[in-house]
Image (tube, rainbow, N blue to C red; front, side):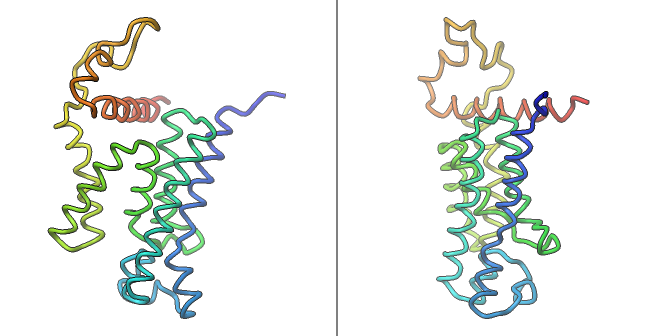
Length: 212
């Protein structure tokens, strides 16, 4: 009996989506008030709309739950030793589950806290950079969702400015004995290996997407 190719990756990715579908804000409001959060406020099931209904405690509890499910999905990808492509797809799946939960007819939240939890587990330095950008933007514009979206968009640019690995020969490769060209320069910038890790993951995802 032959093993099904990528069966483990597929199951973990689907599990990540299922975790994302657990929209804690919706169930918290339903349990506490009996109301359908989708019919209240902005109609979103995210933390901001929960805060409008239940106040600050509901907001922070929803953020914590959404953050933890993103973290758990990325941890599962590491626990089952998925390759970088599978890990990134699991992170995407948990966020998509939050934004488009199937049991709520694809009416979810914005995925800011969920994506932050997943990124922090995937790489704490990149996650910390994302969190720092989010806090600065939130202090400036006072909008949780917009701050998260802008931080998510700006993070790759920030990594680029921190010497993102472009146009370098034998990027991330070595002969098994000698460190690669990129590895020998890690001491110059402690964030370089983090940027290199993100670049290799991004490259593996794009190559896989182009492969028929």
